[in-house]
Image (spheres, rainbow, N blue to C red):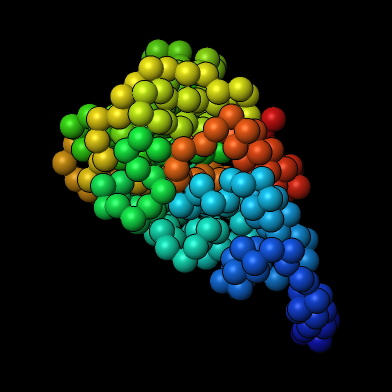
Length: 274
C-alpha cells in the first residue's frame, strides 16, 4: 500500500469519526478519554452500550466497567464509568484486539487500583457486585479477586475440574455456586446484608444465604488474586476476559439489563458466548 493511499484512509477515518455524536453525556465523557477509538463502528458500539445502561438505571450502580475486548491495550485498561480505577498491566502481556487479554497462569494480571476497604465507592459491605465475561471453556483457575485470608475475600474462582462448580464470593460471603461444566460465560455476583445472588449469562439469579464479613485490604485484580498477605498476587489463572465490572448492589432487572447490554457488545464483534 502506498503512503498516499494510507494517508487518505487515515484522513477519511478521522473525518468520519469527527462526525459522530454520542447519545448521552456519559458516553461522550468516555469517548473523549478513549482517544484511540476512532472508527464510527467502535464509537457506535460503545455508545449503544453505555447509553443503554444509563437508560436502564444500571450505570449509576457501577464504580467501574472494563471492556477488555477493545481496539488496543490503552483503551482496554480504561474504566468506562470514570477516570478512576483504570487498570495497570503486570507480567507477560497477551492481548488481542477486540478479543481481550488472556492469562498465563504465571505472571500476568491487571490491577484495578480498587481496594475494597478504602471507602468512597458504591461497593460497600452490604451492597456490592462483581462480574466478569470469560470466553474460554476452562475447568480451573482464578478469574479475578482479592483475599487477605481473613474471610473478607471477593472472587470468581473456576473450580469445575476439582469440585464441579464456580465459586463466587463477596466480602467473605459465599460461596454462591451456580451449576456449570466449565468457567465459560458471563458471571455476576452481588450481595446485600443477608444474601449472595449469582447469575450466569443473564439467567435469573440464584441465591445463597451469606452475611458479609468485612471489606478486604488487598486490591482487586483480574487474571489473578492475592491469597493471604500481599500484594502482589500469588494465585493466577488463564482465562480470556472480555469485560468486567464492580460496584453496588444489583437487582434482578439490573442483572438482566447488564447481561443484555454487555453481550450485545460482544455479539457485535462475534465473540459472544451466549
